[in-house]
Length: 268
Image (cartoon, rainbow, N blue to C red; front, side, top):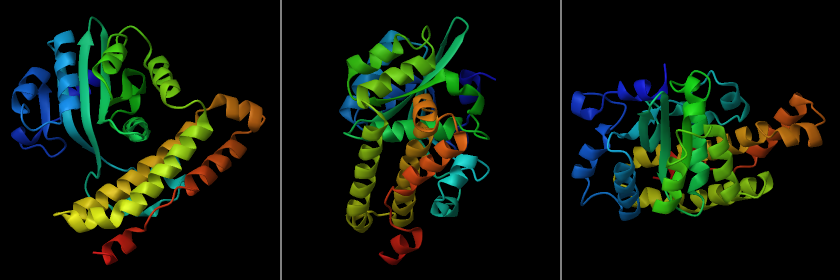
């Protein structure tokens, strides 16, 4: 089943579904958010609608952290498996079809290192046993940095292979893997440093703890998987030995700093 049909069948809260807040035509969603959505994202969504009036949007899609996935076990972040329900939240997926092609864009709010979360969400939603596991070549992850940037990707979405578009987005963010890893470590440390303040200010403490744990999980995920899919690393660093590459990927993921789930609860 292609990505459009899979996403289209997800029921939102209006239909008593629990997996997303809104799922329907982008035009209908835009009428609902005039005063509530942040301005950059709203401008991008309006621009996408002008490009294709038939686009649909899935907002705050909730997904699982799957215990069966090898990479999830290897990164050894047991706190992620303590979260109940569907703790991973993908803020925006815009999806559509043109002729025989079905494609989708993951959109996250832009910040200096938010692309890391976009890639982490992509890897989580398309990993084995995920409901989009067979759609990894139909989905591209970007940030809502600018209207022009998102439109440039969207205009090629149905004609250029998703993997090529994702690699292009990667090159715009990172010159090499080491830069990605450094940004992920810096981001994880920043989340750690701000955790106490975020928890103190949060009305829903449990939701904030879940958010913190998921952020560290996504950072671990992107550091691990991005290393594993790097064919140059496999051939030039590990001499084609996938076990050595996997071990180094695990070591890289282990470097991500975090506060334990139990400690977060004790700090409330």
